Image 1 (tube, helix red, strand yellow):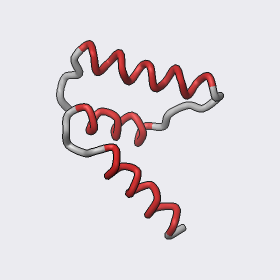
Image 2 (cartoon, helix red, strand yellow):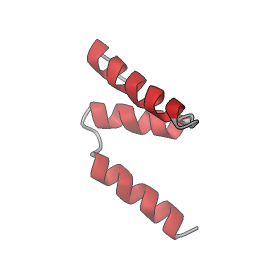
Image 3 (spheres, helix red, strand yellow):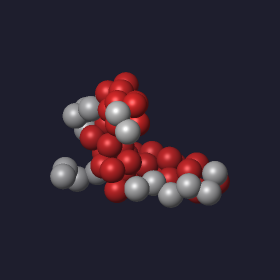
Image 4 (tube, helix red, strand yellow):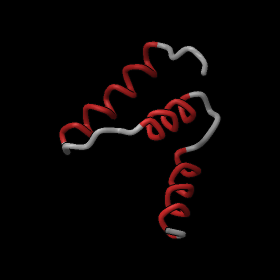
Length: 58
């Protein structure tokens, strides 16, 4: 994976901190998706659709 710049690292840290407030820990897939969004490889809408499809199909 590409090198994360400081802003992306900060943004991901903020997501992790927000999740921690809710007593949630991001899994490796979530962190990977956040990085792909940061690099423009995926959109947030695409990730949301993937998650919906995964849970819709069991």
